[in-house]
Structures are given as C-alpha cells and as structure tokens.
Length: 111
Image 1: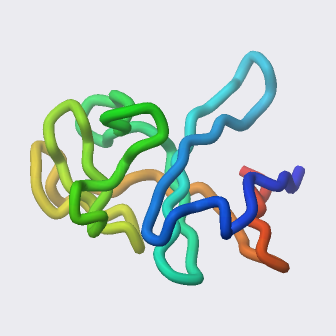
Image 2: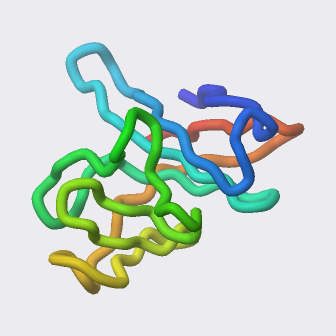
C-alpha cells in the first residue's frame, strides 16, 4: 500500500530522516535522503552486521553531507545507490526501499 512519508521541503538539502514501515509485527526501519530534487531510501541496516546506520536519531550523513555513514564502523555509502565505498562492507550495498516523488510529496511504494 502506497504511503506518504513526508513533504520534500521538510528535508534539508542535502539531508536525511528516519521512518518506519510495515505491519505491526513486521515493522522495519528505513532512511530517506534528499539531494536536490531527488530522494533515495534504504533499509536502516548496515550490510556488514545489520546494525542501524544513524549516528543520531534520523541523522545518516557524514559531516560534509556527501555520503551516508554507518555509526558503528564508519562505512561510507553513496547516496544515489547505497554502494559501500569504504569500511568493513566495501563493495556491498544498502537495501533500497522504493519511493517516488509526486507533487512535492515523498511516497513509500509497496515493499
């Protein structure tokens, strides 16, 4: 079922936020990143050990806001595709979560 996550203008540019989705007994954690007029979403799990990525609640980007950064081991991921550029999971990728942008609203697609 399609669900509105937020308005695009509620996210800093670039910026990130956390969200949860799924049925009560199957809740999952996700993260969304805005860069310009584009949004990207992933499960909030490091491919190295499954730990949450945020270093503060809802904060996923490095200080320069160029990469997603894992708080546990410092792995860095490209915003556009979740590919790990460095750290213990180099070469692996974050699991994408399908989102679309329509009329200024970010929508979570069926997952």
